[in-house]
Image (cartoon, rainbow, N blue to C red):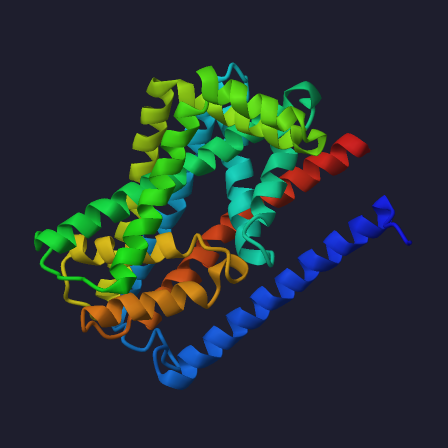
Length: 337
């Protein structure tokens, strides 16, 4: 009987990952084709923009998107300091912008995190586990802040405070997703000490291959035990998402929208939350589809166009990361020379 060698298993896993990426790309192309065919995205999404005021709003939206990433780089810097890591804020900012750039130009949203980790761990071999664990926890705080705003907006919709009424399976599904993300952070705190941590350790001991995962979860749980840092990180996350939500609202205005900022931003957080599901590369097509669907539930036209313009603005803002990337590469060449 033939037994697979480690090389065979590695090839099988690599092939599976490639197939998964191909399927995601096909789904993205299919969604984009459907959105154009159905008219949910117009041939010229920028068509409704009129005059300098509209272009000014879009430019300001780009500034706010970039500002949001400046803010998130400070959250990472703050978490590193909490773990005793002397990583300067300038490096946190440069690597965050570089990751932002690659998230928009690589076929997977994890590509930017990988590049970011490479630069943050350079020359810190003994601190790699702590750095990567901190980066993952940074992501968790970002998602939790987003889920909290989405859940708060859902409450506003259901009580009528935001002037919108949103019921149905889509609303309940996104509420469930927001609760799942928030409960994930609570789980990290509960599993970070005492009997749950000891039980997880014994479970992982039976599966040696799970040791790296166990170490990563332990690093994240250690972060979760510091309530002050967790709450501060969540506060920074809220500011980050408020900047991004305001950017989308400005685009909504530039394209002729008349709805108020709280209502539009509340809907936007539902769309971004759905975008965390890894269905397409970088949520391409998926975000625009959900955006058009959510806007349609409120009888608001142009939802797909708004999210297309927002993606274009985001990609343009991420080009700032290309500058930091080439600065990194220049330093590498000087070091190697």
